[in-house]
Length: 282
Image (spheres, rainbow, N blue to C red):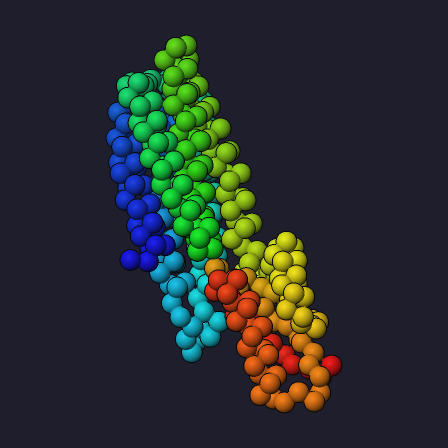
């Protein structure tokens, strides 16, 4: 089974179970911070589902309608996921403010809520690490976005667990909606960074400066005389467009072999790379 699809499926299963746990305990305890975590996990589940389908589509080979492949579907999914996170955070803040300035706050089964939050943090730590590992190995934007969601869930779950512990010790119940608001603000910050990272490549962004420097170093090592080097990223696919200079007396066949050697050298180093070479007399 495709490693990206397999790990995306694991994320769906784990998020589904955590949502049920958090929702049940949140309703029993009346804690808005636990319910906010349930909503957070629901957004993670939606993100995981989007990632699952996007990584399946992104690995499809180029076709007549998409001659450059389907890599950008992962960036689109990342944008959708980040917007969903924003919406979830706003909902959490609205509910927390209502709770804070509304009726008297009554909480029950706080200890059970703390235990569920700790279990959530442990499970998401395991799943997010596996997601990050596969994301880095496959350059998957969608899986990295999914891993980021779970990473924020780890921090917020731990924050809620600590907050519930403080409520048990101090008896100050209004800490519950305050914790929920802090969780939401943290989520908004993470969503902003995810949106920036996912949206930028949709504008055909060039490789990073360090990556371009590494590419130029390899071209020089190959003895290539070149100019007008252009790069772009589309999901986990990379593209290079380059003009190279070849002596005028070189035959077409020899020039073709030379270009093939350059292309083979680069594709052996950079995964999912497409190289377009323009030959000019030099």
